[in-house]
Image 1: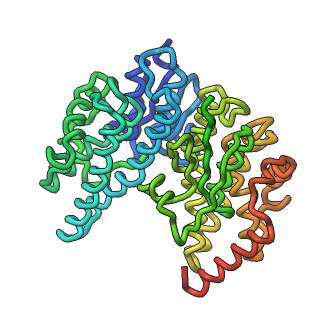
Image 2: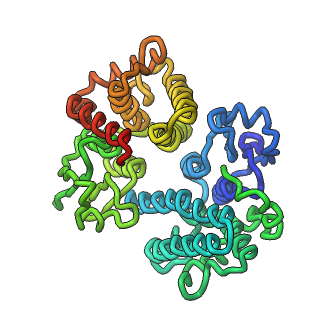
Length: 225
Length: 223
C-alpha cells in the first residue's frame, strides 16, 4: 500500500494524535504524518474535519476519520487481517475496554486539567488528590482487565492501553512540575510497572513525546483533540 | 440450553434508556425492564453501576454494561441480526462520529442552554440550531442516517426526533418545521412509521406534563 494512501493530520505532543499513530504502528501501516500548526490550521484539516476542526484526523484513500478513539477502532477494523487485534474479541471485554477508555477521556482528562488550572497550593493539593483517586480506580481496572498479563489488553497493547497510555507523557510532566508522584508503588503498583512497559513498547516509543519537550509546552493546558 | 437473561435498568422518560429498549426490540431480544427511581437508587443499581450510578444499565447473564453508546455497541456485537452499525469500517466510523456528536455536543449544549439565562442562553440556543443543521445536512438524501433502515445514529437521534419537540412545545416555540428543518421533519415522519420506535417513546401527554413540571421547577429556582 502506498504511503500516501494513509495520512495523519496531527500535532506531535497531543496524546490523542499518539493514539492514532500507535494503532497504525501495531497494524504495520505506513502513513504520511502532517504536522499541523494549531494556530493556523491547514486547508486539508478544515476540509477533513469541518465539524470540530481538530486533530487527529486519519485520511485513508481520501476518506477522513475523526475523533481519536474512533480512529483507533477504524484502524483495527480496516486492517483487521494485519497484526494483532486492538479491541478484544469478546463483546463484554470490548464493552469494558470502551467503558474505561471513555472514563479516561472524561474523568482522568478533566482531573489532569484541573491540576493545571488550580489556583493556589490548597486547590492544587485537592486537584492532585482527586487525580490520584481516579488513578486508584484505573489501577483496579488494570488488575481486572490484564488478569495478570502485562497490558490491559493482555499480552499485547490493546485499546485501553492506547487510550490511557497516550496520556503518560503528560502525566510525567504533571509529576515533574508539581513535584509529586502520581503513580507509585503503594497505591498503583500495577500501573507503575505497566507505564514503563507501555512506553518501552515498539509501537509506542517512537511516538511518545519527550517529557522535557512537553514541559516546555506546559504554558498552555494539555492539548485537547 | 442456558437461558439468556437480559435486564434493562432505566426510566420511562430518559432518552438514553429508551434508546436501549429500541435497540433490543429491533433485534427481537427478550428482556426484563426494571424502572428505576432516580431519587432513591436501589442497591442493585449501585452494584451494577458503582462508578457512575446512572441508568441505563444492561445486565446480560449477570454482567453489567453501562453508558448508552457502549451498550448499543455491545448489543450489536452480541446479537448479530438486524445490525445497528454498517459493515464498512469507514461508514462505521462515520456513524460513531455522529452518535458521539449528538451526545457530547448537541445534548451538552442543550443542557447548558437550559441552565443559562439572557444573552448566554441566546447564544447557546443559536449554537443548538447550528448543530441541528449539521445533522440535517448529514441526513440529506437518505431516508435514515443508517440509509434505508434505521441504524445507530437514528437510534441515538431519537432524542432529537421526540424529546426535543416536547421541550419546544412546553417552551412555546416551533423549531423542527418544514421551513427550518425540512429534512429532519421528514425523517421524524419516517421514524414514526416504525412500530418498535413508537413503542420505545414516552407516552406523549405524560412526557409533556413531566417536562412542564421540570421546567417550572427550574424557573422557580429549585433543581
